[in-house]
Image (cartoon, rainbow, N blue to C red; front, side, top):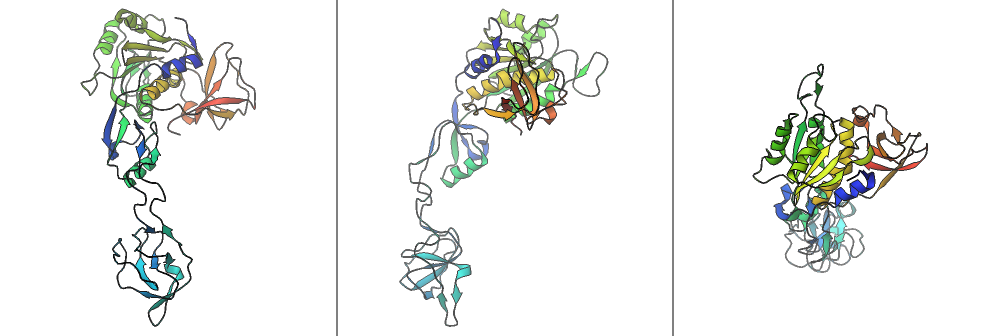
Length: 387
């Protein structure tokens, strides 16, 4: 299989797997997940005529005789008679026959104990069903559960939501040269992807089952792929490896995948940095994404293959394309797409395959077509999930 264009690789990753199973989860565990089914109103909202302000519920025109009972929690039970008023709090149930709510700041109580003021009929009343009626669709399937979604679901009487479960991901960091702590040494480099990728995966909705280091031997890699070390008895949905995707003397990933019979869905993408990335189907509904070992090249692989794959598995719609206008010209590769870190349309320096200094300040990655883009050119922007 030859390498694919950047767009073809992304598209193939996004459609590689079927949507993961759905489950009903409590509201406090649903944030960040995707609704597996539409949420419909279980009752009218509001479910009764309610006061929109603190003040008095009044019947007819004033002045009004104030009734002793107060509707601070919807406790007014008897209908108001014409010329009567009752104190009421915001959100409280409006007594029957009330025609308006006189705001607290607009009412005056006379020495004779009468309430005076002016209010037009219907003022500051939230009628039953103003927001929705029973059976109305409140949220469509595929909606990401945000704090606002949780609030609406709770208001509508939901205690749990039907959501697509998180994709379980295991991260395997390949390379005997990697150090997990301390300063880099001669021939050894500090691992940067171990700290970088987990938070990104979680922001994409995934559940990270484990992170482990794998030495540069074929046997170690075979064992890591065959025997995941996750927190779950179930196999991870996706294994992510870093390094080993090229054809160097210790790059065993292609050999191990071929020996296991795992077909390659993507074997290289025409994108810089990161072109020797790959996507394999280990077995039905289980995948391996091989990211290059250089940090910014791995970021490119994350955006090209891993993010679309997770979006597809978790039922997330790919965000509509964003665009930015470049402040300066960017040199392109003759045949490949380039992904470069930018901030507010300004290309950032220190953007080589092994560098993260520019990416650390970026608000997105600009997609530079083959041949480059001039100053003022409009190009696609891949936003970062923590911005």
